[in-house]
Length: 460
Image (cartoon, rainbow, N blue to C red; front, side, top):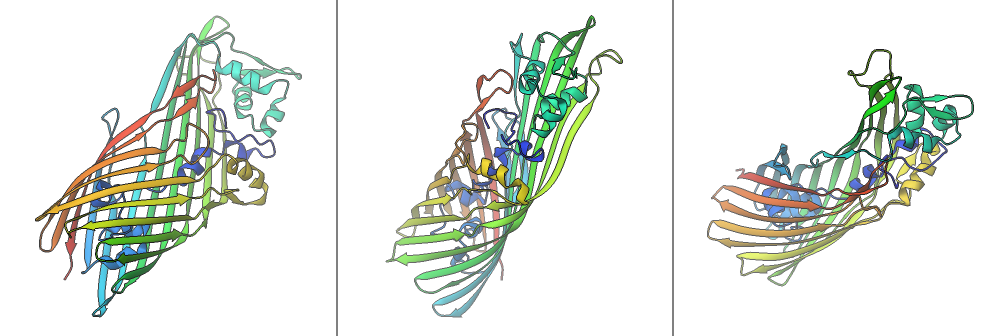
């Protein structure tokens, strides 16, 4: 995938061409939302627990609670334009603890969290461009007929032919709209959402905790690309062309989590956790539309045309494994670190069989994702002060699918039967895209700031 048009280079199937690598590379990055304490410490809590979002990483931490508890988290997000992009309740927790013996505890927990990456819409205007959409369509088509374009997944030339932007004389396609426009506007939208709901059970003895969880994972991602060009010349008229591509995937399925948490001496904690691979039920939605601008004269220029496809797949969500370590400091705070790795599937499309070659094309462009987290907390009387850092590497070899850096700080207040926590989180991504018409490399940075609040209440 060397163009922003998102088409996988496979001539065997029309439907597979629209599959975006974005859907699969973004799914390999683990969610970054959670409770305020979790976010403030960079998510490095798998060796410590006492946090709902840590249970979704390592179910053994469900047994670190000493009493039943319920908590609710709210999040307010701002992007680099200072626009509000998120206002949601990303995390919920209910847990119960049963004392079995003096040194053993049985815990059950129900947890959920939702993470969303929705960067500010990116756009670029090019004045007097050297290459137009019509030029690009003709270059793609070559000497192919409209039917050949359709069969080989060249949707742009085929849709342009159906919309009377191009004409076919039996030998080759040629343009009805000539010249290059004065202005070319590119507009890109991206959205990714990951939701987890998990039931966990854990047992804690004096020095070790073991836990297991069943999670329902729901993934949603989409890309929308719009190109407006103004004006073209035809029969003395100045005309606009507007095209829009929409490519989205929704997936859902169950997976198993296992975890362990152990004490080494009085101050050191270690953890190990694993999430199994699973097959997700996935629905792909693709649209390619060419519009006539209402400002164009009647019966001149472009007729509206839409090319669409809806397909169902079985896709692979790979396994994740991680290790953590924490050092408790005089029962007043801690320093913790965590590493996890999510593998890349060789073929992310499991079924139907006719899409396996396309899955292999996508799999060859994916790479595993590394996740490093470091966090600290210091308690002073009823207050807690926290800081954290997180690095998640990109999950493909393409620059436009970048990882991110996350810096965070937080504060907490503890009562007899309640807890209130705040976190301020900054997330920074850098990436590049290739202009789909000119081939120019363009920077695609993204940054956001989130304010997260969690209120927890112990249950009698």
